[in-house]
Image (cartoon, rainbow, N blue to C red; front, side, top):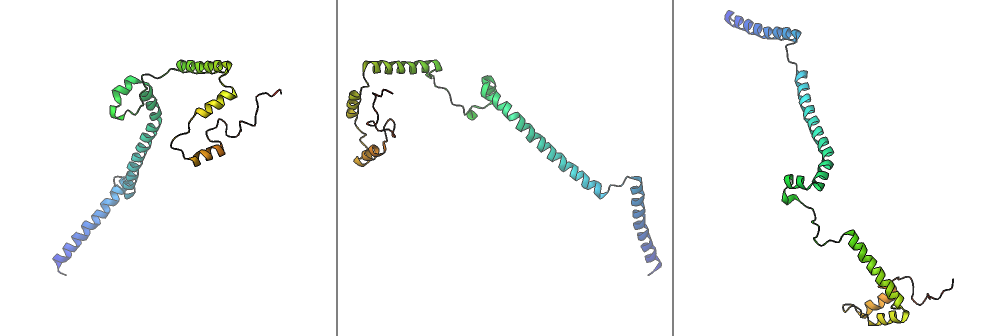
Length: 171
């Protein structure tokens, strides 16, 4: 090795050693960024992303019933913020009966049934006559009608035979 080559090798080694010593000095001063610090910053950013996702999902979970109730009950809010294509409510019919009207109709039917019973419209003879006038459905075969009689389908109470009870009990 010539003197110049040797001097170049020494300069190169000196530069390499200078890098080690400078790194060591910076490490002692705390100015050197370590690999562990870089990893911890990555973990911190990942933790920040996870925490923000958790927080946003938690807020959505808490707010959704409140917002749903507001949408369901507040007509002005719904018209302002909910698009028309997203409105899945069933519109009430214009001719819907109120509870009072329905109650009055039921009372009228009960009164009519009572008056008919007092007049004698439900005597066994009249009921038998009514049964004779009722025609079975036209789409039923004779087998279907026989099965209906056998199992009591279409009867008021399939477990009670009309011949088994009498109305003249003195108990």
